[in-house]
Amino acid sequence: MSKLAWKNIHTVLLDMDGTLLDLHFDNHFWLEHLPKKLAEKHGISLQAAKDMMAVEYEQVMGTLSWYCLDFWADKLNIDILEAKREIEHLISIREDSLPFIDALKSSGREVILVTNAHPDSLSLKVEHTQLDNHIDQLISTHEFAVTKESQVLWQRLQAKLGFNPQHTLFVDDSLGILKAAQEFGIKHLLAVSNPDSKQPAKDISDFPSIQDYRYLLDDIQANPFIN
Image 1: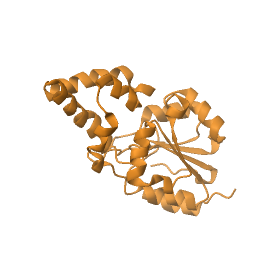
Image 2: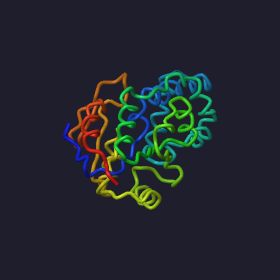
Image 3: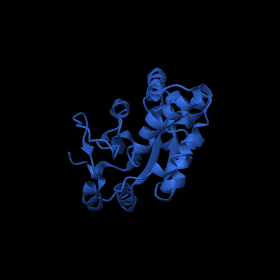
Image 4: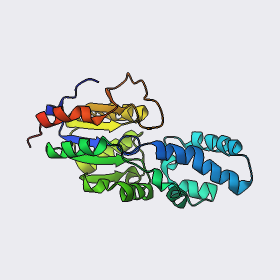
């Protein structure tokens, strides 16, 4: 990966699912567990349920509804949070995340989580990972009624946080979201190429990418932010 210009990075914005947490939980929930529950509920085959959900996902992908537990609970008549709790043992933090976050904090930088996850999903994951003990602020974009795919989100987020885009690093596993941040003017961008521990790493050419944050620790420690 290309070296990041740590001397110019004051604020670090971090995605959650696939960036700090293993995306396996979410992929398994939405692609396997929820279709299974739907198949059982309606007496249809698992494949039929998967096909039906694929159509539903396609219609709202990237919108607030895509990430909204209330939306899916109403549409499917299933308690989504309770269904998530059925497999909550799969929620796990990447083993390289806390060393990365703690190094950022020790270097004097502000570290903020910005996730499209629904507040209830965020709370469930914090319950299992204690991310709140390591990060300055935890923000769900539902607070702004718009997702990171939208320029409106970045405008509202900057108005709330007051960060300088030229001195901000944003880390995410979604290339589409990274492109939206780039369009807004976020100067420093980093893609996670292995968001799901059960899937092979992706080949990423559009942005600097990382598979293990621990490769960044020496550079972070050698370049503290002096306010």
